[in-house]
Image (cartoon, rainbow, N blue to C red; front, side, top):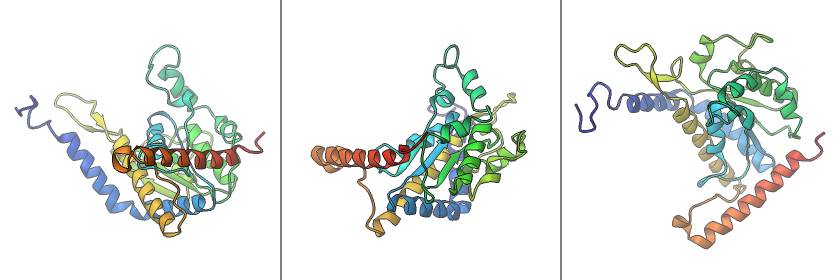
Amino acid sequence: MTEHGFSDGVAGRWMTAAQQTLDRIEQTQMDAIGATSKMCADAIAAGGMAHLFGTGHSRIPLEEMFPRYGSYPGFHPMAELSMTFHTQVAGTNGQRQAMFIERVEGLAEVILRNFVFKSLDPMIVFSSSGTTAVPIEIAIGARERGMKVVAVTAVDHSQAGDPLPRTGTRLMDHADVVIDICIPVGDAAVSLTDLDTPVGPLSTVANAAVVNEIKVQTAELLRRAGKLPSVITSSSVVGADRSSALFEDAYRDYARRLAAALGGTE
């Protein structure tokens, strides 16, 4: 037993799996991440936005991207609460409903009609399985609008599942760039003795790593171009007055960009 009360065979196994996943992402996905960062930088520098969509727990990387300390305007999280609000689990707003809604064909177009997208704006769609209707149709609809699409997905996991019945396709089939989050089939990483259901999913840490790498690389491209918006920064780093000023400037910048995306919609 370790000092934490767990056998040596269990303690640290999830941590090891997470580190191995991040290593695989760094070894195999940096070109795709770099290409995505270039798309984002081009859009933000031109006054547009990089749009991000995900359902279920794939909502988490949207909120990781903006707004939070160390982030900046130009990224537009599109989180539909009906498909992402899982904390109540049962009853009203329960997970049964959320999982049903994300499989409803035709809903994606209703969501997209709320916005005006610029041709330079990329659409980054997060879905570990890559087989549910709404994320796939968001990608299809974005491409029909002339946008570049990035699929952040688990390639092995996606290929192990059934494709969308209507099109016979997966999210990655509708992407200009595919970023593989390199998680195992089923997501969970640790198998325990006499248990046929593994525990400890990896997709959240993998998605967080991908979006923050995109955020940093995009920031450097924008800095070189003299187009980096204000970065939201803690008062413990820059002092209370500057922290407040940075937040207000970032808030106004984001509001201007979003107003343009909302303008002229039906």
